[in-house]
Image (cartoon, rainbow over all chains, first blue to last red; front, side):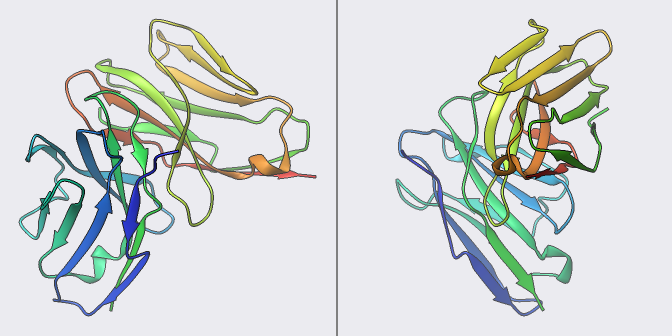
Length: 113
Length: 112
């Protein structure tokens, strides 16, 4: 069964450093998403991406964040200068239609020290 | 208006019991309501979803009840098993955008 994969599973970084979280969505999916989940809290939408551009973003997704689909398979989330409060689980998701089921990856746990 | 309120925060049920998790929303523009199941260390996985044109949907042991006028929906798990122990999230999505709005989650424990 096709699945969304994410790397790394755990990333530890120093405050102020740049991180790139990587995702490989399901191959025939066209819509891609990033969500985050701070420990013990609800899942929060960050951004959706379609046709090589951001289709929607939340207030959390400020200028420190960017997304890219550098090739036909990867979808990345970059945080330019990490803050302590960026520590969270980051989930990538993909779907084959704008309002169809979103399939989630296993997540990357980001720890900012 | 953007919130989905979920209760209870945690729930312990004996095996074979019927845990019920409730969610409520305000925004009438929401038109798709999925439930996700999340095991520790894993990403959320879609369990079952409903649109507001039906009042109930059943898939296996999982049933969603939907009350459009009250703007509430709930998840029932029939004949619950210890393997159902997980965190359950309700969510909603508007008819005009892409983002899932999530409830706070319910940690469910099924005791053997």
